[in-house]
Length: 351
Image (cartoon, rainbow, N blue to C red):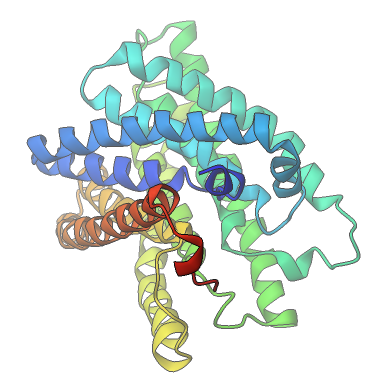
């Protein structure tokens, strides 16, 4: 168990993100019973992961610092921000404001701290290896975290015309705009990495699905801002955001066959074994987020075709979530059973 905690992946909060977004999608579709079950499951995972990460920080501080300085892993820590935001939004849908507000505050604080310190730490790392060659799909989680904060702001409902309402509108637009700019910058860096250094089948892991998920959450954040009450900042950008999110949604739709084809290339052509890895949750969240984005776009911009696509994709998201969750349970059970099962020295087989 200590080994499992010591080697805990920095982005494991993506499991909360994936479970939470599927719960939100089911809630929006009216499947309340299953949605509530997934909501509390996401909350349980959230608390469990916090306990494990704190344990890791205390007992294996050097491992944590090494991850924070590793360009291939550090940005995955932004999943803490996104997971807090997604879970808070799900609580807000149930009017559990007492649970949602602390999560929104925590997400905002961590977003500010990580947003300034973590990229600086990563980009200033000089260990003899080019930074650009280590850019990967987890870098997009930085943009996802910004958009999750924007969505969190849209869940607040202060009195219209009040100073608090204007402040919330300003923060929502700011977080959305920062997320969009970050996405453009990260996409350029990842594309340059692919062009200059290439990507092997082993390197093209499920985390690259976040390239689609980061745009999908921008659609949800933008559609939520469009539906916000009137404030000077929201009114100024409402037409721009309403048009932009449609373009983002179309690009997400275009990316899906590309990502599926890359998976076939990785596992079908090059025979990379398909086994459980924590980054599989980085595929669950984008699929679920695209379903929610499609439904949000259908409501905000009155595009029934987008809503219909969202219903189909949500079914796929539920299936993918169930498969990955079952694989995670199987993986965890084997790990725990391996630590509890007594082995006679004469019967032990190494390797």
